Length: 402
Image (cartoon, rainbow, N blue to C red; front, side):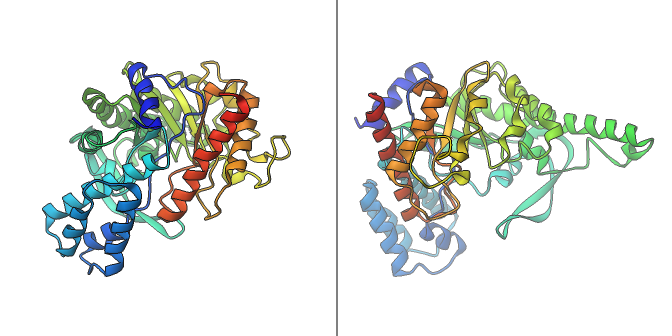
């Protein structure tokens, strides 16, 4: 049993995040070129085969020669493409296990996109076209046109697949209700009829419509999907909310959406807050008492200099607010900037971790993660970043005597 497996056994037995400097990834990895090209029906080049072979060997993926045989038979039919997706997931899990993370998933290799994947498995939405998100990246946007409900659980198959070969503990990332609602047009809960009356009346109706929409998504889409995963044995569910601070006046609705999604369910729930002014979440998130961990990106705002002083760690000034939350959640400390190919040294990771432990006064409340998913980086860069992250955590443990 490897080190990650030993840690996973403890977590699985107690469902407890109270472990010092637990390491995990936050979501996506880039899809391998061989997967992208084969799905697109493009010709598989010798370089694609070589990439699959080299990473199969490097990650010690069992029987990866079978993947090469599959690729050589391209173009692939629908059944073969599903087999290819399974191989992509096996590579993704082994990627994260091989670097030494305590908790893993597959880099979301089975999914299309975090919003579209959820909406595609729901009722009550109609697609409206594509919109630009960032860096010339586009996503398909839908409108809510009727009552929202779950057509079918949309993470069950991938969870059962990964559970079949993962050695480390699994944590399932799930797009949250507030983000799904915020990224959708609303043509059901707030309509033209609500535009009558005074400005104050319209604002009140707009607010009521937003609350109805967000609750509808939380109660009737996200919650049953979580329940289905828990029924299969999932123990740690991460609610991803990149839209969480879009409107500071709706922080109460964001909190409601989380609570409506998880209240009364038996699992460990955490949330991932993407790049933002994190001060905006306070004091609102004091009401998210079921959130056992906040995973937050800080390295993007930080200096690359070594040191554990306030001056050396400007990106981490807000973490004392997470420390002071009354229900004492853990903090998933982002220590890798996912927007650049810069490879953080183990010593830089160490100092970021030591600074956070000093602020919190308790290493059990600090987990160590990248700032966000690493899908914008190549596998070589992502591997080096994560490898150094794990090495930096070991240096911090040595300094702390853990």
